[in-house]
Length: 329
Image (tube, rainbow, N blue to C red; front, side, top):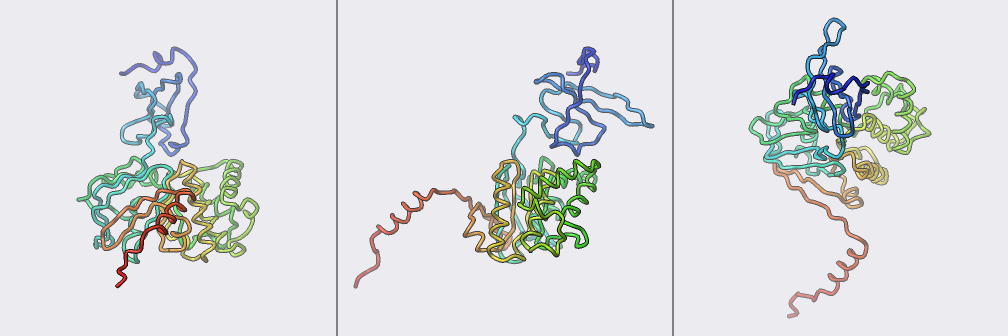
């Protein structure tokens, strides 16, 4: 239903409403709230420093325009689905490493990606941010409501700004302090207000337990602390998806468990999904979670259902009470 801007506003002064989840949207699109149940989507065409109103559309609850986004302003109608892969094939250097993969990931999920070397763990993670392409004959491949099979290069930044990536080798600048490493990222994504950047840096450092170490250089931090800075960097943009590629590979067992526990805590807060590629069996035993097994191009998702201590003890008691079935010849 189309209405004019003046008819919808009735001469009232309307304040713009922006959602953090769509802060990456082009500035030619603005949403104005009329009341708790209505909003209008206003599209402006920028020409010679002038803004011309070219369309106004009544939009209940949802902010949408062309194919730029399908994000919702109101959280009660936002889908919590982060990834949907149905019969997806992935190739690396023209060699198919994963075939017929089916995977659905929701907000708050924590999933290990496991398998032998060369099974495609890194290729899978890279496919989520379109560094490795899914094959054309694949089925559904959507990440954060974007169709990877149709994704244009110009839209890659909109996809990747909603993600955080944690690398095995930290990738910190050695001549910058921890806080400066984070500040570089914020400036790169357009955060110009220095005080706001400082507050955001303090928030993410506190979230990873390094609130008092922002002034230190990478060489003054332990391996585990450097990886925590890397995780803090991934959290800067309040991502919906964190991809961790062997984040414990350069760490000792105890530190690796602590880093994995931190990533699980981030997922448990409910807003972010975390996929972690690993071959660390100590981590898998100490901190069990859903596992996606890759091997020989095949995949298998093994869900993890937490049990209470009482249920575990009852299971052990049942096993102890089972009769000996061996023959006593």
